Length: 538
Image (cartoon, rainbow, N blue to C red; front, top):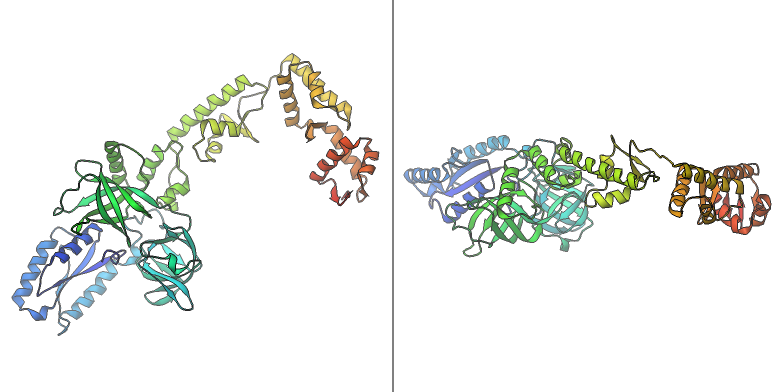
């Protein structure tokens, strides 16, 4: 019954007129209430076996049982399968109520319809092989839609599958939606990998969990839960063992530790049954499928805030408590729709301001200690200040006072101010390479003779390379841009010619020590193209 009730909108609640309410009747009624069902019809069967007074007595007993519940005031029909009495009226009632509570308005177990279409989910209740088709699963679509050729995933196992065929209520279809009984023919999986309790949903969208923060609803007839009480946890079509850890004295909020991972989203309903005797003791709904590690009191307060907020309010609370905000995929994994995620910021604006202020201070200190550097390397800044943050966060914090250039970050106000001896040194370094032409000196020798200490000399060389006045050809080989430009110009006049290393040395007057690195550089620049032992100038 627990697996079968998943995804229904309208319950036909059956009570036998000759037996009235039985213990199982009460348990089924409790389960329907705990699952949050809103619509129902009551059928008093076997009315032909008792007189009218007994039918009326059973009617009164049922009304007393359902008082204050979703079935209070529900249509009630006495019927007989033998005589057919009451059956036409019951059929008409089912048709009328079916239109009022139709599955097309459903989205998910407990999820809101506001904020865009939810993602597809189908809890699997049967799996089998069909000759000529392969693996087939059946279930009731609890959210979203599925189409032919969609790529799905079987949660929590992680098998990626493709939709080869769809049937709804025994009829072939190209699409199935929330509330429909559906069979799906799957490609990419063996029947042995399928089982009741799995959930079909979009591939890579969700993340299974083994620990949930939940709102509990315990039955008044059930004994009080003790600390770490083991229970049978029923959600969708799945049943796993679980441990309940109460968070408050009222037993309203709890942390549920699952023996096996399940796909659980906020709002998903569940049922708890104890081990001995095996009976329903309560249920509830998921508030947070990925709760943080907090003490009992603070965790209960946090869950209460999330529980009382609307969907956009929940996103706001989750974003505010995340040190570096949340990414859109992280929020989608919690069951929020794309429209809901797009409606608000992914990081708290106050936290953005604080982070940006911190980065400005760090980059400013970098400029103070390394005034000749163009800026602080991005990766160094990221690893120091945003190591646990999404990679894209740093780029989103740039702007206003911070500027990103290539692989560095600098303050917008940062300007390079060379000292007098540095101006002279940078002119010496550039002049040495410019005068050398293609037979360049060793860079260490040039730096040693520029007039400033080694550390500053290397920084000045980096500035010339960054500005493009010098060009690094290979390890230890640096050329002035004028020499490189003249070489490219000379080769352009020989377009279409094929040549070897010897010809190149003759044209340029350089030794093999310089010729090979130069040719490799020209290949990378697509000025020349290597073809075996020779090269072509295209």
